[in-house]
Length: 141
Image (tube, rainbow, N blue to C red):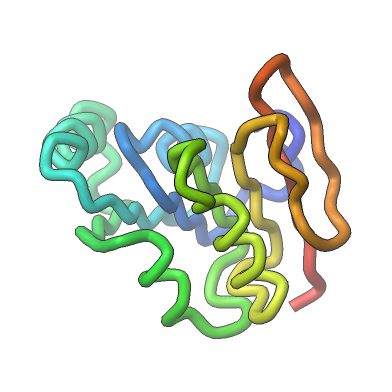
């Protein structure tokens, strides 16, 4: 999160594969204007709603119960300022999402957490932390 600190104040944030909502909620705590969360798991949705309520972020949050990749496919260029994604490491979700963003940059910044063994497409900054990596894509859209 600290890598993107200067991008966060006033940003419209998208948290794909939201789970508990940690990334979007952290962005809100650092000054993001709004956060939209996309999650399809019923169990995760319950946790997500509870976390948003506990942190008093309801007025700044929107939750979408949907498949994150399908949701992203529907987005146009520049729909968000920052998009965070933490897809399951198996199944190729990180690679598919990166490929979608490279075709249509739906956020000015896309941060994807993935397995450090994944070779991500396109030009981006990747930081590795053991078996985990974070790749950050930037666009001028």
